[in-house]
Length: 247
Image 1 (cartoon, rainbow, N blue to C red):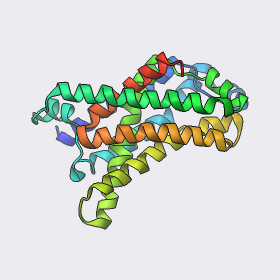
Image 2: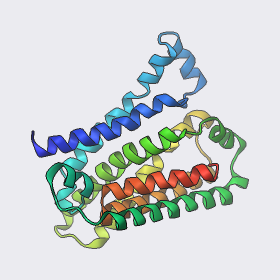
Image 3: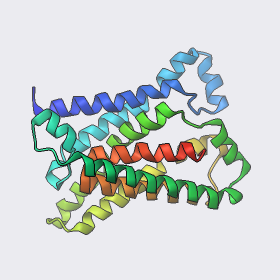
């Protein structure tokens, strides 16, 4: 089997495991839309329909990353070792820096919540109480699916496109790619807010964009410097901190 196809199938399996984890929680859907869909579909069918978009995004992320990540010097060292017998870096440092990065990002999320909470509107806080993903969604969808879509896909493709114009590989191009993917990662959190509370006000917008962008920058730097699996581990660790901090 072609090496890229094998790699793509493994990534899809990991990412789709995260997509399937969405079935274990109550997905956010405005009451009007839910009532309209319930006229035609059962609740289980509605849940299935809500998996279509993330599956499409997962496939697109894999395709974007597959044809760009190696050419810009990014890596997935553990999977590449397992699938292609490439040399594996020492695992212990990867574990330490991945967990450390996740702890840092998680603390930023908690600090940001504490700072912004007194100024956030009641409707937004109620949405947070209504839709709080369970551990399976946080670890599998956040750790696998989002990292494949955002870091492996969007970040790799952004850096590749920038290199097409710059023609060489200065470090600042990686930082621009990290920032672009992190901002897109933060923007991905806005549609649910818009669907339930309408256009977010300045405070809600700043809270979502700032906290998620900082987390995305941490994960993006780890992907750049240590590989995709380290970013995945950091993302999962971040959610451990958030669960402990009740956010």
